[in-house]
Image (cartoon, rainbow, N blue to C red; front, side, top):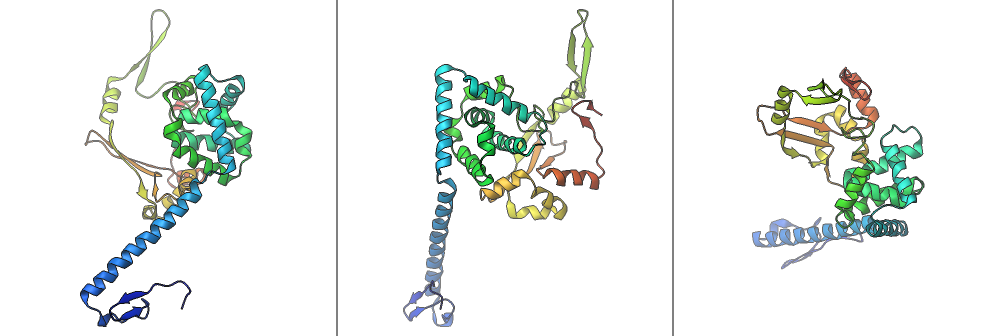
Length: 308
């Protein structure tokens, strides 16, 4: 017998589940055993979850040091209403790294970290991190420490975030996630589809939105957004797409944090029910490029040329 085991105690004696003869037990006795087994299982699961969570959120010396730096920068900002010269320079570097393609490993690591903070905590907290830590402190951490820091900041988001930090992020032109419409590598095109450039008598250029395009945009307004798919449902996408999803940084972050739900799959449902639903997948870069080749997708937009 194993050193750890369960014993069922009944009016007929004590039994181990593997040796008990259920034929001799009445229905009420079986129901009582079933309920007690369920209660015991829930208690054990709750204890394991508590211990696992404690390991994840337990503040290490490194996390405590980062927290102190954040609080110091935040306090200075509240008093002065601005960043000091060192912090401002760190933010400017972060903006440059976020808005340009990075090929050097250290810069890519820092870019990924900042994007994770923007995604999970917002632009204001990303600015605060850049001002408090700088590039070299972040790339000097190992991957587990950076993940723990993201997890810690995510849990502290409510207490650290503020509209003033968000406004400051806008002032420094800190972009949303890389590749989004408002910033990052995929910059805004100078002229969008459905916009008409009109030269006035004074020589200024006005941009007017085509009426039909405006009407289409209104019909495409999102009414509902669905996400948080159970992670064990991703294989239902088929091996081609599920493998691509599981190579993404987003998926790796969720798995590291022990998430049981994933935001790698999102559906957006428009208000106009005559319009189609949009489905978005987060996939790894190399896997995404392979999908482009497999499906023979053609380029339709360029950051330098706009719509092609």
